[in-house]
Image 1 (cartoon, rainbow, N blue to C red):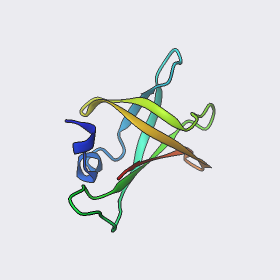
Image 2: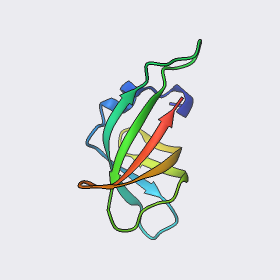
Image 3: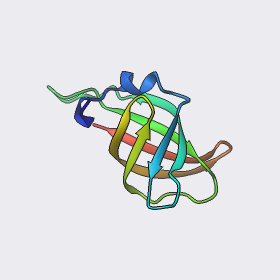
Image 4: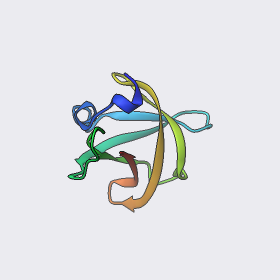
Length: 98
């Protein structure tokens, strides 16, 4: 499936799953999909906007940018990732699909 075809429902079934991010390190960085949120705002003829919240390790976090994500069921995809800061569960990251 192409990235522009993905919807919130495609990710919702994988909340709690581990995704791996290729970032140039020896091993991929494991992060967990924590939540999927749909936006009430939608432009005509476009998919419904949604965002993804991920949690990763507190130590060693990624900068904002494009990364290759891997998931056992969804495969590989290049996605723009934004760090939000840490909470009790680890470093938080957001991905927005418009």
